[in-house]
Amino acid sequence: MFLLNLQSKVPINVQIQEQILKFIQAGVLKPGEKLPSVRQLASENGINPNTVARAYTELEKNGYVYNLPKKGVYVAEKELSVPADPVRNALRQLKEQGVTKSELLAKIEELYREEDNAED
Image (cartoon, rainbow, N blue to C red):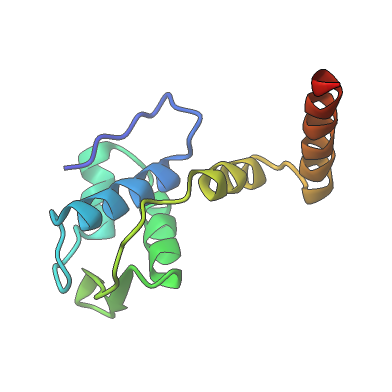
């Protein structure tokens, strides 16, 4: 079900989150449907269970899934009218890679300054 690129610069937990959101949006996963267990998904893809747990926790925090202790993780009844925010995903990846807020803001200012100078 999941196609994870272990060589990608996108963290595996983010790849899992994005794929689950796409499956929900496409109707492949429906509200109330059970997701694979953390251990099952980890063993099927040869990844650490903590990575899967991190992805599920983030999805739960954002209201896309809910966890029933000792029962599993299920798709929540939440409307997905727009696809995942690529800017937010990129920022999350940078944050996870250790880029600080001040470094990021400085790069953004630099980029816009270069573009403004190019227009003159």
